[in-house]
Figure 1: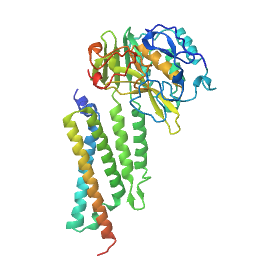
Figure 2 (figure 1 turned 90 degrees about the vertical axis):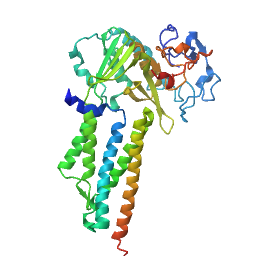
Figure 3 (figure 1 turned 60 degrees about the vertical axis):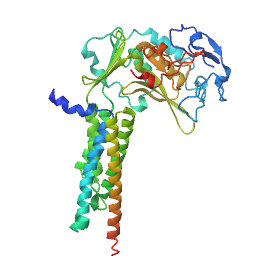
Figure 4 (figure 1 turned 45 degrees about the vertical axis):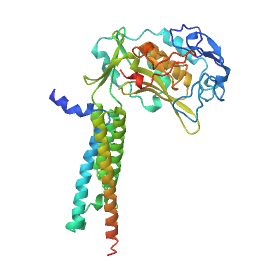
Length: 116
Length: 324
């Protein structure tokens, strides 16, 4: 019966898996963002930043926000307080992460224009 | 006007549409001529506005599409012919053997193009309780897999070939294999989440329905929470398309016919299926004469939420009344 319990995530309330996946993506984005900040401000190894993955990264941010929003909608319908808070936190964190990413990209564009 | 099912059926059956311009008068049991219902003007005072406003379809009982019986596409005697055809067939098979379910789990995987009402009528000809099978008199069982199994598998395979052949690996110095990786992840998730088999049991002997996924009970409740309904979507030009959906509280909605323009045929099929399965049938409007309610919420006649109005208008039970 144990291997069936590993599929317990499939029987979560509808939308919980969406919020959970978007939260997982948030942590991935957070680690990439932290590494980029480190390379931009502290070690100044600009060639180790994630410029080659910018398109996929922005796409991933947008998809994560969409999934978090869908999970939040399901949470509102389910009327479960804990689930609502979880989905709302996931959505807000993803939104904040998106704007952080956007600011860093603008900074790096400014840097690459070499207007020192 | 083409002939449709006559008004001579007893009130115990579902209310059929009446010939000519008359309207089935609910429990009154006879056809009363309502001529203004066929026009596109403002409806008479006995009609309520639908809660969901469709600006293309004014609130009349029939959508303002050209009469189907007058068009060349729909044969005018279609519901009557289908009635005689379906009554000639033997009743739905009674099968207690588990092997009988073998090939039928994928019967709801109809591709959109083939998912017409004629296809459903053919299926109903061989099995009157389609998509259910009758285990005992009064007990209907449906086992199915969601169609996201093949969609997820297809997406996974396509993205896997893209990743393995390095087709979209790099586009102008940007690494784009991440899109294929995303597709693989989403496809795999869709596949894995749809692999458990779903099982819906309608048990009239106990008055309950039971929905489980691979043996785990998801929901169990009274029979008034399962229904057959007609859903409406319209395009920008005002053409109305109908879907026949089997749904319920905490059930996955099953679309039986997708995107059909023939309202009468869809309504006939929906009513017949609801009659065979003995569940409620709802029209696409929230307030309509055409609902057939066989099971009321428990204690409905004493609940202050449902008021029997003198004009005999039955409303679709609101969400608060559907709480078990």
